[in-house]
Picture (tube, helix red, strand yellow):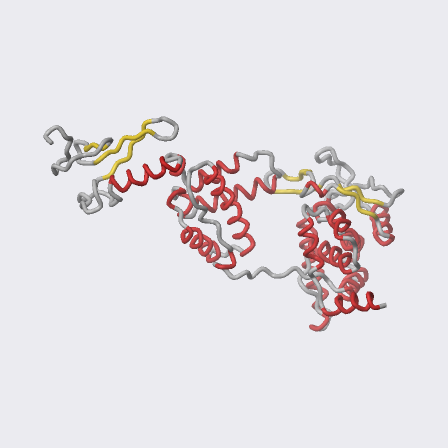
Length: 397
């Protein structure tokens, strides 16, 4: 027994265990990559007391038990100690060539994680309850349900990668957001035909907003994303009466104007011009003001310009619709008031109209440039009594 290694209290130390001169215990082991690693603790067993002035922690043998379990299961004992921020950065590094908006979204989520206690936590310590509490904190800070849910999906994907890399066993973000937070997202509502007619009539007769009428007609008649509308040039295919969508025009505070591919791969498409859209675009080309000499990503002669002769951007249309609706509602009775309208409302209305008209879902998916058919089919679910009755009457005829 005298040949056995013992600690300062006379207890026999197991293989790999040792005690340093300062009283701290150490365990030496070889990780899954064949590298020598050490873990330390001030307590050998759980019943030991932590020395005065030292940070309380689990005992060495509890740590060893966890390490041996990890090694037996093939868990990366070093990788599991990376922080949530490090994991998210690692996940993003696996897919470099992303759109500017995606890159900015990643940067913003990283800043959110860095400012929250979760970001500095090692991934092996993050439990389901921790992830849910993080979602609650984000809600309390004023972030929208949809935003938090998108962030949760990103983190769930990152933790799934950590599982695949044998860093952890479970995904703490594998939960339904509506079990934690109430979904207060306002449902997208399409304009009724009557609302659409009243909007166009008011815009066409108003001295301030009549100049936007053709742009509203194009949005309502094509379902273009507002950035795709901004990217239109005067070189339109009037002969074949179609709009070739192969780019979008965007702007941010860092890069200024820039041209990017459509939002999705399916975004590259050709949209037929209805007679109303054809005439509106013809007028827009004819009435186009003096343009500033700009070349953005190889594109020139943008169709819709601001007062400075530069291409309009999404923010121009967002503020325009806000002002238009505010002015309209000021001059109409409450029961005739228009709802909140954004450029996307136009796209949503266009898609809903075609769905209610019975267009083949695959054809509608193509026209809209949706990345998957599920997104398109959701528009067929935007039914009400009037549309359901009209469909049944059509079948009965």
